Length: 318
Image (cartoon, rainbow, N blue to C red; front, top):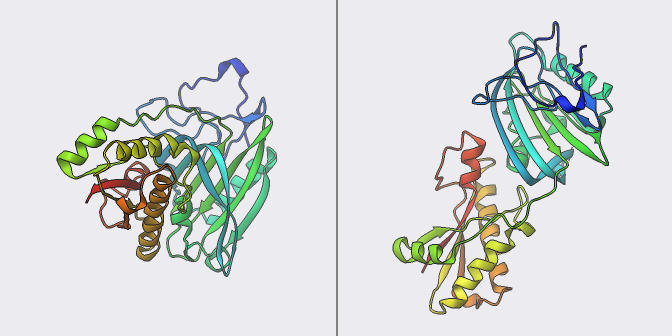
């Protein structure tokens, strides 16, 4: 096992570091993990700065959110997945596994490297029956972990010390792919979403509908996050300024999870927005709600970016 050690002032990424016989590298420096970047070219996908993948893995997808909540799977049972909400900088990476390597070998390399640097494992499971990733609500609908339908799956999640907090890591493996989900401590920047009331009104007048930007829910739930308040305030003000305007709030989801689950989730999210607008003084009789589930995507559900665009709330003029 080899580790990269760099001075604290040298946290920049240069060319690829090829370490002989490296299976996995994880380093703990100044209270946080640090490893080399996988690619020198910023135009390509990069491995996460905190952890290098199993040797020979190919990074196929990476999605980062500066600040959000993440539903970490910390248990499984007859009632479905048990999850806890963590928040911070969220990263989701998906790798293709090298051929000829078992899920056991890949998992042990990650475990050995991470536990060697202080990882405290909170939950682990092996096999479809023990993990039950497709029992509703599925892992895919909760946090995007889509392990397919095969029986050879492995999962563990834990925490690494990072300053005064923790980095939460989840590793899910099937014979073809490895998923790394990482939640790092991060403070949310506020005041970044500006909703243009005039633009909303113009779109409603011209097109009869408009996406309401800045609406955020906890993953897999209809609980509105506090960061949605500016958008809800703007929508409420729009309706108060136009007392004759009647609207339906329409919820949409991505394709993670089953049809019935997503249809119900979209309905609940639309109702949550209606309730939030009513609590801001809008007459509830002017508001309706509908859920469309994943029936009307506006982007490709094959990527995290596309799925994020499809998870949306619309205002539709009645």
